Image (tube, rainbow, N blue to C red; front, top):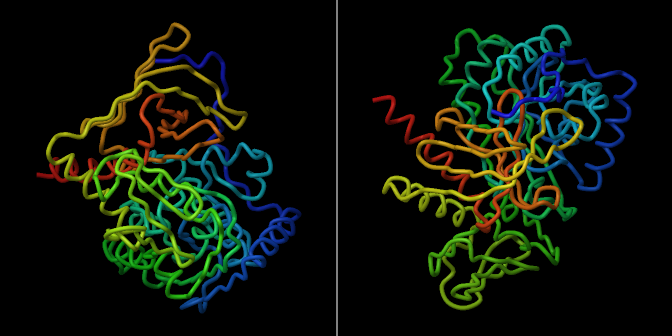
Length: 415
């Protein structure tokens, strides 16, 4: 394993700060300005009698989510769970506006203490984005099963902020702002007096139900026309599998089109977010259906024992909020056995293994910081940003495989 060589780790033990009163006007100014440009409307339901402290579970689509959240809870302050790379903006500022650091897809007992402190001592709104990443295709990501237990443990009301249009305005595969209308539903789903009597399963059922969303369906139902020239540019990063010739990683896109470089079939994306084949059959007019088709193909590959990924990769480390440290090249393997990252950095052997049940999903990025597509794997002390060197457009498939392997192995080990 790599030695630390005196590199300081992010102080995860430091207690969350109640948002400084002198910074609140700044957060309001930034949030109100950004959301006004998108004509944000917020619909509040069942919120009678709900006051801080409470748990606010938010859907996660784009950077503007944080600004929508700030406006939704105005004038109350919040503590926010933010990934380690978010603190690169400015650790002092992030801490003082109430942010709590989290390394993605890790089981962190310190975080539980921080949540309890924020609710009981800071008496804040505790804003959590349990999908743990921006939505890849505008539909609900898998939620952790531990949410129900967390609610029972914290003994505070639960509100869900389900946002609409945020993904459409800046999808993770093309971050250019479309400036379309956005909206949000803010709904209390667990009241204080219900917590003791509700089961964990019932709480999870309510959370999952309140988190359902489909951005493309919402766009069509609300006639949100996006005449953005590059509205399909980058979409091939998520839709990597051609439904016509069934080849992988040969998709490409630009402007309002997505196509396969192997069979040369083209599809156009309308200003209502629908796909139509330029010639021949339109396999999937609704974009999330194409995405779920890919998931099914990965699931089938795993069930047949054929799924296996291995490539040489470049690895960056993010031990703290000072910046990335280039470690060097390594080999990443992913299979039904989980992740294995193995290399030698500065003459020292390095090995990171992640059991399939340690991660119900994984975090991926497209062309992250201009360095290429990456997967990030975290321990409680470090986060590793892993860039495949040879295989093209593979991270979406790895994300699917992580989720499907988790479900399969969990089922097998439960027998």
